Length: 216
Image 1 (cartoon, helix red, strand yellow):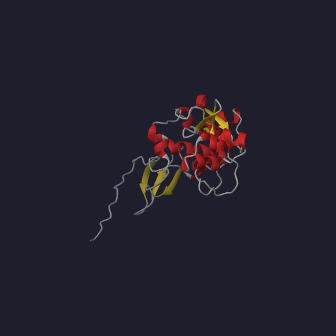
Image 2 (image 1 turned 90 degrees about the vertical axis):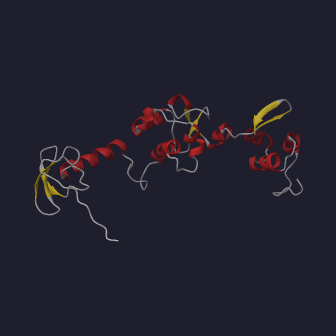
Image 3 (image 1 turned 30 degrees about the horizontal axis):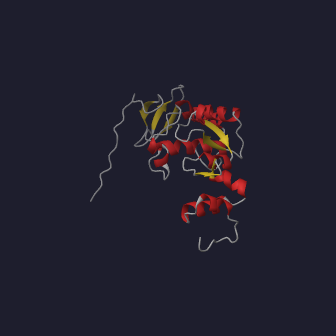
């Protein structure tokens, strides 16, 4: 099958992008183009940014100045920028593995935080450090300033909507909290309660003798 390559017919005066205007055709591919700033340069209309070299440099400089953290590539992106990007992906990208527990169940992002600079300003004024992670106070609520905080991994574990509350001797605490109190690892308690189906009292009071609790 022969593929026929189609070309877009261009004419002097056509606007291609960012206000750039075609002036005169030089050959089959190249045109004289006038940038919105008034500068004239030679380029191909297809895929052209619409900026002359000077304006192109200025635009790139503005982008780097605004984000300052390589927004167009993950190679040198800051941790905070990565947190912001992942937050947006979880809520807006149906192809993401965890989308169903975020955007898929109605979790949204405050429109103000669509701007990275606004999110960054909030983060730095609310205790962000490289050792903390973004946590929603109400795990069924949205990503917004009034419902978010910076928390340790342990605090986030306690706040997960899948957290298992255990009641023993009249006190109700999360499995993570009982782990701290008893000295029994969280994973051991989880195995005893969820997999081996031990009663709460037995799970919290039986000393750990081996890594593999055979016959549990």
